[in-house]
Length: 98
Length: 320
Length: 122
Figure 1 (tube, rainbow over the protein chains, first blue to last red):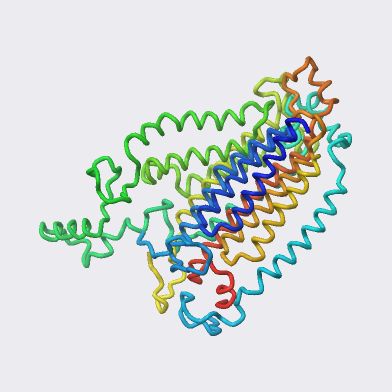
Figure 2 (figure 1 turned 30 degrees about the horizontal axis):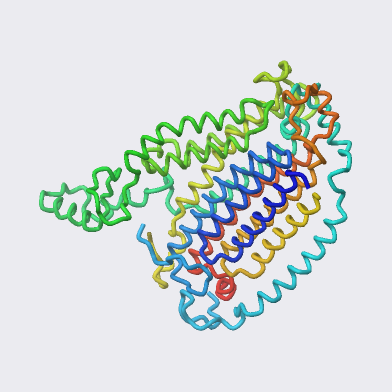
């Protein structure tokens, strides 16, 4: 059980934990941050597993492209959706004058 | 619209009969448990990490230096040996960007992505736009604009301290803007660095996404008006398709000059120099241009989406 | 020991599948899809890993090997890493399209709830 495998198992545990957070968090913005955490943890795993090119792409996607797309989509969708308490998202669903 | 039992349009009414979510978690859990069992059984039987490399990987590794003069086999594989696969993936990204642009199209043609709907509001409201407004009308109109809070300050610096948040200035305070003036070029150079040294890890796609990050940084700091000159549908789409056309031309020349579609027809510089990869390096730069512009178009098209298609006046459609 | 990577990838895949099957918010479903894609990236790179291997980078290798020797030594599998690179690019492209569709659904049906959307089809 060398240090490499220890690091590997710790990262995998964190990864599965943040994936669980993505599924069970009711607040959508929080879930997006958890998804970004999944991306960054994957990047560290790829560096450990000897895949620098894939780590480059994954950090850029996991930290820049995906969160921006999700947050913009949530913001745009929420301006027209009236508050839905049972929809599983506690954000402020009020109509916003743009 | 099929009104199966739904009274309120915004879902306030009684639950439609077949939409009870009660059964879904149990069924979902059972299906997922089945999938988990199958996956676990399959993954345990997969060869572990002590298996020798497959022949194709060994061939890719050994051929990367002599044939492409690249000391980075992954780049040699991505942009050289399996260039056709990357070619397909690049054009799939273009197809996705085109479909996002089509999905987020606004009803009227527009020059910029954001803030166009407020541009002609003044003229639309005046009865006779050609009649010159006299002093009282101008004063009344500016008072009304202040009351509606529409003349947003360009940057919040002039706003007195302690005004109720959120301030609706377009840009950010002077501290953030000066920090961005320092950081943005550094990040842009980091992005381009990723793609220039083909013989080290990095490639066109991460560099393009870093460019997206730099553009979003400038948008957040300075507001859309300052970057609206470049980040408009017209120039961005041209830049993206120029990158794509460069890739196609590069590949076709490979067909003409070197026999096969993605063959390398450029003279090979010695390894560990900037031009060492032949066409792999040019492909990577072409993909940088195409991915950077494509992702920017996708994000800003999503930002500029407006609700002006479904003009459902009868349900109080919002005409923002 | 790499089996743990495979099983973690299977676990993240099943979490994503569970999110897609049971969540009612359309954007949460798209997040489930992103989780499933993330698990495939992890799985592919874990399969590409070799025991005690370094990254497939022949640029000035350590312990005195020449690039040619390293190419024959124990190095991770570059071809599988290329598959993962392609998968990441396609994942981003598809997520952008899914989210554009989700926003249009939200605007047209006034709700992000998949059940209500199915009830109000038309």
